[in-house]
Image (cartoon, helix red, strand yellow):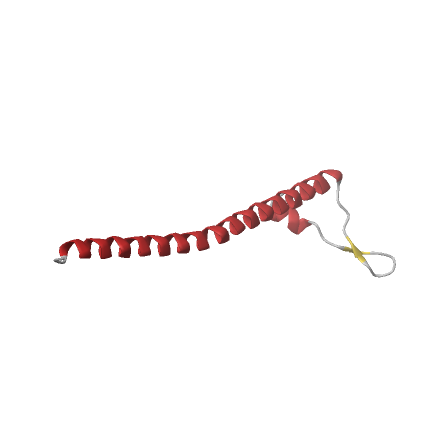
Length: 84
């Protein structure tokens, strides 16, 4: 459903002043499809976001582990170069 088609859908005043929208079956199906796709996209983005949130602490801990491993290697190499 294009922006133009959405703009053409205007609310109408009912008998008691409440607004409502009348849609053709085709418009309703298109709108329903848009809503479904939007909800699906939001769900996918939430899953991606959660996965990225889980990866960030792993990267931090991995970097911390690699840094401590590197320090240990340097420390070990430093001992080799020192006379006994």
